[in-house]
Length: 455
Ligand code: TYD
Ligand code: MG
Image (cartoon, helix red, strand yellow):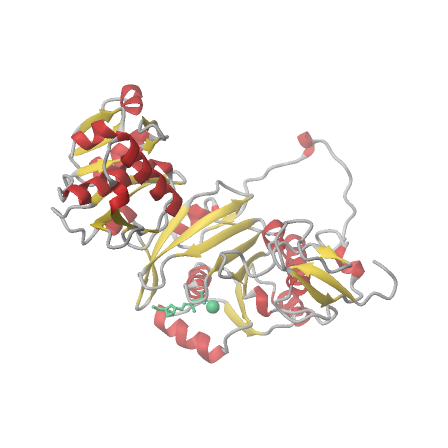
């Protein structure tokens, strides 16, 4: 760092640091994201080894490394444990991101309650709410017992002291954007503050073997506000998402050093806090109108879990020269592409119609296996002919109108059988490789035209 320099420019997207202002970030190529921030003295803290530099490490052979069974603490929620990879790992740093008001504080408070009830010492630090507000929320979610301590604080130096004094097993920081360090001169929530604060928490987690949950707010673009740097520093990144108007929430793992990613957990927001949803498929399909045209049930795989959901389409004659298309819960361009396939390969005059596609229940699914269900929902609405409500559909559609194989076909079919579906339209290629499944009629299709013949 140049002598006497007191400010530097940070990219608010990726945290890249530069001495000069640039219109485009040289690292992540985002435009207009470089913001000037004062830089403090704290050069030393940035380079201390993880663990506070207590003992000097020496290089060793892998064979000398003993892997005792990783200590995992159950959160009391099967759905969350699964996303974390069977529980909380001691000394891990977990980032929980999500829109404001989605239920991050509620989820973590409930986890803290469970942990305290099972005999763990937990410290919940809030920089956003007063103790009164927390108490009001705690009253909604039920009784709190055991060693659950609360602290309203935003200064990390004080927080560090409190953690060293109380020695909890799990710490919750709500939220990282409100935390600050005195020796960093920029405002809380700025890139350098967030980075330095996380650094301290990382040292606490690794040095003292405490598991730390960090709440991070998400910007409109869907990234943890400003600093993506956060995602690189922590062990696990979870996103809590869902439509704020719908009551259920999906917890998605996007990075996990201790387990598989792309696992999801499903919760429902009730009057008394969040509740686990044991069978998401049943939940997503509840209230489905039977015998209505333009609806098809698809099966998507999330992580290792098959989830059934309803794809709805409404196709109506367009009033203006330009047809309108919208897609809620799935990829807009994909819908356009599928309509072009219908137009070109099956000779439906799609350009004369407006089309609205929606995944019911407010979930977002982008898996290509949904293609065939979207196509059949569109055709069903166009012809005003309902799809058999006891039929599930999956398959990827290619540009020549062919139906291509998808992964884990057998799991999808088994999930459908479990929920009482009687027939299934699936890619022929998948059908040929699959073992026989009892209790469901399987219709293999090679292309979109064959699939349309089944509805
Ligand atoms: P909150 O956990 O404060 O969100 P975040 O920390 O992600 O900003 O969630 C607040 C929302 O959840 C609020 O709109 C009220 C709702 N809520 C319930 O519906 N039931 C409950 O029992 C609780 C505690 C909150
Ligand atoms: Mg909150």
